[in-house]
Image 1 (cartoon, one colour):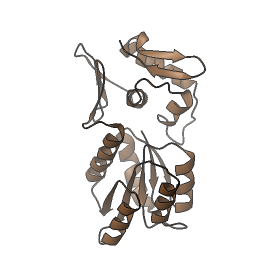
Image 2 (cartoon, rainbow, N blue to C red):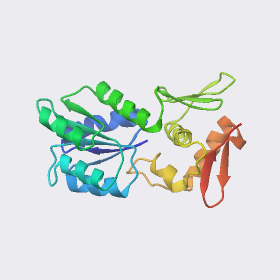
Image 3 (spheres, rainbow, N blue to C red):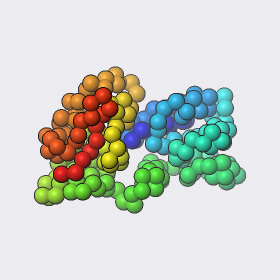
Length: 220
């Protein structure tokens, strides 16, 4: 899953980024409202973590503009703990949840996971597709036979994206955007390597190739 972290506090960004990455998220970050609104419009994010006290353009204005133009990406706003009016204004403007500063990462993680579960229609920390169960916390796959397979970070992100979109053909570009970090080369050809690795785990027939279109997770 791909997150946009909008925060001008560099220490907080340096604290959050590695923790979010270790939880399996792809993280892009910006430090001002103008870049935040541009990226939110141009790229496909699963959730935006939005500080309201931003330079150049306030976070609340960014949120209002996105909702005005029918962008439905979930937004978790960050506010100063004593700014209750900001929290109210943010929720009224279309935020999905809020978190006051300072906060514990565990609470941010839990709120973020809850938002994403609501978005994708899952009520717990696992994804299921027929005989496959993917534990989002442990980043491990369990098959019908009971065998549990620990996945690498990229294998986990790739399988998660496929399982979040059952029955849908996903292009190499769509997949690469949700498995690579922003500072890595997003070579779509490398996707084939990781698709083949997953096939070795799942079975060759479980991931179908559609020429010039992409890949789809299929039944056994």
